[in-house]
Length: 246
Ligand code: NDP
Image (cartoon, rainbow, N blue to C red; front, side, top):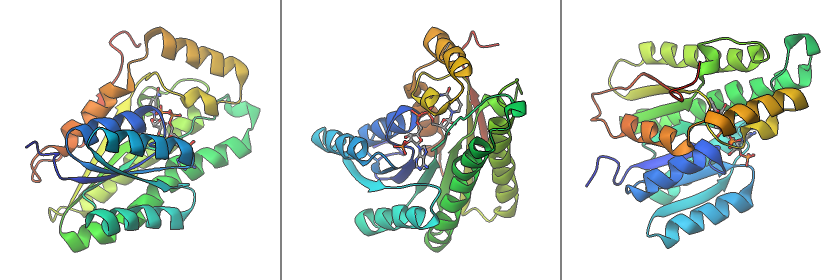
């Protein structure tokens, strides 16, 4: 028995990259996972694959920009597995580019997914956590918010907004019910470049990801580490990046 065995974990952005790797690792270690994202074929395939390996998984179509979808994701976890121990708010997009390009639609999209999506998850999960007497919010933020670089200003701003949000929530929640964890990865080899419209910026990020990005499983292991701790231990912030990343 590991401390992960038997936990019920909902994950947004579970259809690829870090979310998918996290779902696979936690399910392997005995968690029941509830998979949220928009690409339902991917989620169904992943859920089936986990179940074929003896794990417990269900898929739930989720667009994190819709508050009701997060309520349904949390509701599905409770209906199917009896409770929700952890919400991993991982869904994210990176429509990065210079601020001077004035890609206002891209800014809106990043705010909607990266910030509003996490807030909607919190709104859906907190009442359940309070009623159960325990719960854990894990979010995927970014080293982009720690070392600010050109083309990533708005993306970094959304990630730092989440970092701030979690710290504030942590300070409001010292009654022992809620744990919060913000994980800041550096370059990770995933499909995240798919959300970059600017071809030149996309190429550059892709080159870095393919050249020295770490595998999403490395971030999944950090999620596992955070949630396997005893309930009186909170892993607040973790930075994980390729050893060679500047
Ligand atoms: P991927 O593109 O592989 O995964 C992103 C996930 O987010 C997908 O599952 C996608 O699913 C989901 N998603 C996007 N928009 C929505 C939406 N509106 N509703 C629900 N789900 C959505 O990239 P990563 O695995 O890299 O990204 C995961 C997180 O890690 C993101 O928050 C990203 O910002 C962060 N991160 C990534 C880094 C990297 O180098 N890769 C570095 C630092 C942080 P679907 O399209 O099916 O909805």
